[in-house]
Length: 179
Image (tube, rainbow, N blue to C red):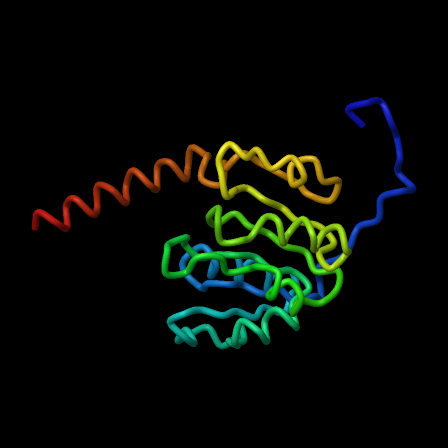
């Protein structure tokens, strides 16, 4: 539309009600994501290195391999560190349903970008939303020019409210330390 084009017939959406959302990692943000997805009628499954979370019986805990095979949408909620390394590489993409949607707003480096582009090109991944990259700013032209990728420049926590929460968390940590 920014180019003055009205290509309405070439765009088709997908409803999320009745679809399965797989969450990789089940910390604070993933739990909030699960709550919202469940309210919209999604089946929520998750995997976490800590195992099954107490008090979240509306959602189903399973192994990463099971989650990859059953999810229509996958959202990543894990930190990047040398221990974790790449969570989703070519092997993991091969285990996913054809036409899965991927969301990575967690950390760059947890998804192998080369494997993601290959999965997008083959149709294994229908589309991806990416806010974090292996290198920032990203120089991966195959990724940032891919027609089925929606990109943002690592702005997941760039709201006034999020920055206020981060500031309060820092105050709480310092206060706790000195008590």
